[in-house]
Image (tube, rainbow, N blue to C red; front, side, top):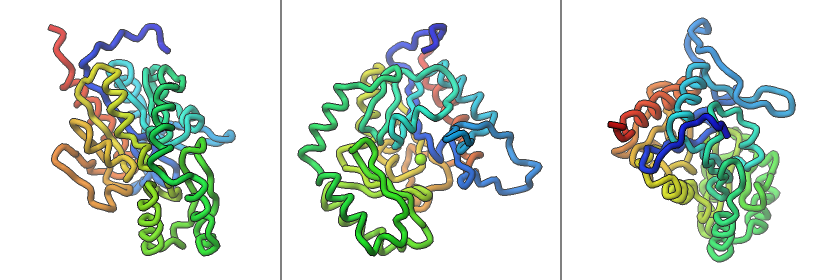
Length: 284
Ligand SMILES: [Mg+2]
């Protein structure tokens, strides 16, 4: 925690943002279309096993650091806490961060045990066990597209898939099967997520907003797992790419970027900053 950071008071605007493909982008998600000479300067946002694997524009990095230092900024991700900690997020350590798709709340970087216990109690009576879903995903006929299956802290499952080999029919069938058992499916790039309905980003958003004094909220995100959060917030932003673009998701409080990829990420940071500035109570 940066001890020089001025205290942020209750009732101030709170910015919640998904990370992958909303603010930070892998090489395959940059969408650097147009002339090479016009491409924005990039900064590395994640190192894994000694190699850079995610990027943000230099301008967005600077703006995001400034936003996080002057407003409540809450990172929200489906990543596990360990995967989240690899990300090079500019600015001071966030007071709150949401990981595991809402299953975990980090307070000053430390797992909040009360929230974890609450989620565990909800899952125990609202969703089929993880092992049952994992068994279905390991079906022999899925092996042509299911390259690797992993569990995230025993809470939910994610798989690296071959998108060219997975059909819409198979995906719809799997989605329906999981839904009947209290689980949701989301396909993001080469990753397929299966997450219990009881673990949501929007429930964690509501909890963190309450803890931060209940100020006005803005949420940004690109995937189906972000949809509830975008509906729950007072204002919402999403990029013109990803699952929500594919489904044409929109509503009255939502703004969609004009650009795609890493340029959309920079648009989102600019949108978050101008909204937070405008929503801040006057000091006069
Ligand atoms: Mg995302």
